[in-house]
Amino acid sequence: MAPEEYAPPKYARIVQAIRRKIDDGTYPPGSLLPSETQLVREFSVSRPTVVRALQVLQLRGVIDREHGKGSYVKAAPPIPEEGTRPGRAALDRIEADERGSVIDSGEHQAPAVVANLLGVPVKSAVAMRRVLFSDNDQPIDLLTIWTPVDVAQGTALGGFEPLNVGIRNHLQAAKGVRLTNVVERLAARHPTSNEAKHLGLSRSAAVLTVLASVFDSSARTVLVADLVMPGHLHELEDAYPL
Image 1 (spheres, rainbow, N blue to C red):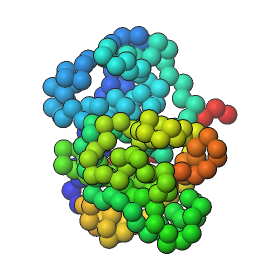
Image 2 (image 1 turned 60 degrees about the horizontal axis):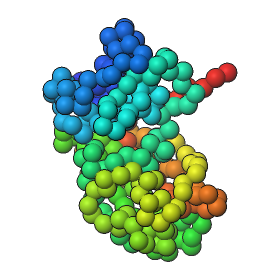
Image 3 (image 1 turned 180 degrees about the horizontal axis):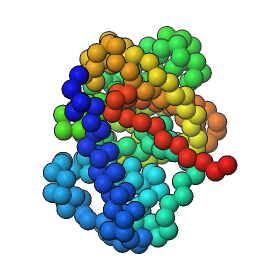
Image 4 (image 1 turned 90 degrees about the horizontal axis):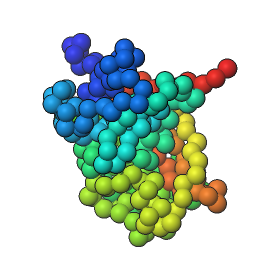
């Protein structure tokens, strides 16, 4: 496999470039970053790629984003107390902004592990939404959302149109469901034949997976997020005090 195939996705390179400019003082604390349009031109990428990079920087505590105003470098250098928390980040991803393509949606038989996490009988019907995210036509990860049918009813989770808001905000707006905490399971494995097909991988490739159980304010598991990421495109970062 050629070395360029192991290059990080374009949004990750933008994250790295902006972090370097913050570190060297090009973008000092409190300063306004270039607009999304300017960053699109600077890096010769699509707007969804820039949006994804800014969302990552926001999740890592590096910048603040204000709707209609722009993105600001945080007034003090960030001291991370947590990692990127991919399960939580998946709940806030905006499919329409990140070129998410809904490749499957509707009621499906719950796999045993999902049924156990949701607390429903194995093989019972649950709502499933599977979204493939790409960066300039390169698949970067595959996200599958599983929810009990009663939770999905009255929402857009069963449709094929990309969502214009994150799943967490959508559930609260559509159903009044407030998601309160997440338990993540991280693993590395080979992709299934279906995952390999959608992500453009060989069956011998490595993928990183995050299986996240998401609870509402009553401590009920109302959502399971299954995120599959090509190992050569992603790394998981964490930071914590000793």
